[in-house]
Amino acid sequence: MDPNVLFTGVRFDQKKFGAEVQRFKRKAEDLVVGGSLQLSSSKSLAESKFDESDATEVRTPETKSGRRSKKRKGENDSGPASAFNLFRPPGSLNSTEASVSGQEIEVQEDKSGKVAEAVNVLRKRCRLHVSGQNVPPPLMSFDDLRSKNIHASGYTEPTPIQRQAIPTLLAERECLACAQTGSGKTLAFILPILMSLKVPSDAGIRAVIVCPIRELATQTARECRKIAKGRKWRIRALTRSMCLDPKLKDLPIDVLVSTPLRLARLLKKKRVSLSGVQYLILDEADKLFEMGFVKQIDSIVAGCSNPKAIRALFSATLPDSVEELARTIMVDPVRIIVGEKNSAASTVDQRLVYVGSEDGKFLALKQLFKESLKPPILLFVDSKERARELHKDLAIDGVSVDSIHAGRSQFQRDAAVEKFREGKTWVLIATDLMARGMDFKGVNCVINYDFPSSIATYIHRIGRTGRAGRSGQAITFHTDKDKVLLRSIAHVIRSSGGEVPEWMLKLPKNMKVFHRRKSTPRRKQREEQM
Ligand SMILES: Nc1ncnc2c1ncn2[C@@H]1O[C@H](COP(=O)(O)OP(=O)(O)OP(=O)(O)O)[C@@H](O)[C@H]1O
Image (cartoon, helix red, strand yellow):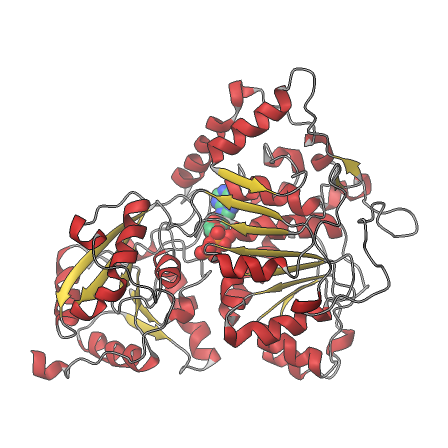
């Protein structure tokens, strides 16, 4: 294996990813209608800029007294927000207006109806499906935001989700957003948060981003710092050492990124206050609404007691049940779906490989290594036991391999992620811990060594490749035991443009697609196979 290929694109810079940047750019250019689409909101957005040099010119959505100039109808300023079941009633937003940075967005059906038509054309081309009352128009260009850091980060044009979510959050509207993996959802919430908060302040935590795993929280905080570069924002990922700090409450923090458990524990012990939070983002929202997290999320949502706090949910998969639950905690949310809901990234070439039985997996893997696989490769297994077993086997074969799972210490986990990012590890064996949100740009291939336990898991796992417009490959091993979910996954592949045999699509319908597999498959000792 040529180790040089490992270093291809592991780190994102504009030079290395010139082609991708161009691809994003090209797509965006295609969206301009006759090169002259002008939305009436552009000016308002420009005036929300947040780069330091521009700070004095920023128009604020607040009056001198520090209160927002707009108040939602029916909003109770004094009453605290309560947990899931007790939320504010929907429909309390004035349906005829929404403000961005204190200005009205006027997507008027003007005399010629041209603006409204242009908005529709842009949304159609971006495959943006939006619903809600008086939804703000999409963002035409990052230039409208006049942020130097965006361009410095190598981002030239907004992705579809960014086009709609940024103006929505800037307009202080709550939102439910679903867009494919690797489509830039992180920036879609980070940017409006920083723009809305405008300047660092000692007023306490003003934005909270909740992610299901620590590695993702660290990554999100890093991305946030990148966008805030040159400013004195205090952006912190909640670490163990911070939790142990007796002075935690006095730490200056503007944006806090955390996993649910850590934050919920601190809240319970009253060691942190979220009463001044203006933005609460639930990233990978469907995961956070699963049984294991829901209590913690409930307490975090309740802890963000500012009645004006804006809540937003983001994920690449948003089952209807989660949407329903989410709506109980949101006020008149804007629903933003890019493309087909719960679909796999079309940039990923997906393949299903029949390996017969459990024992066939290792042989098939070796064969793939011999034939065609280019590292870095992310390989998913079902459990930490499986990860340990395969790690040992591949290490014997001289492959540069590492593993990451819940059985490893945080130090080992961080080191594994870092080495993989740097291209020092060829194959990273992972459990579903790594399936969501992690942005390893250079991953060439994802292998589902063990069949995913749900469609959502499949979509997120394979979404670790083919990110930011790059192409990637996903190979899924299946055995006779995996028939239960095979049909559903074949449909996911077909609907994202992949090829699957007809017979797979005709397998009997499985009703338990979102259920976990009960037992971990075992294969014979490797020695027995050789
Ligand atoms: N406008 C843009 N132009 C070019 N690249 C971008 C843009 N916005 C984001 N990116 C890059 O796209 C990659 C994927 O972004 P991000 O991690 O936010 O995806 P995501 O939609 O949250 O994916 P997932 O669903 O897997 O969490 C990142 O490397 C990011 O730097």
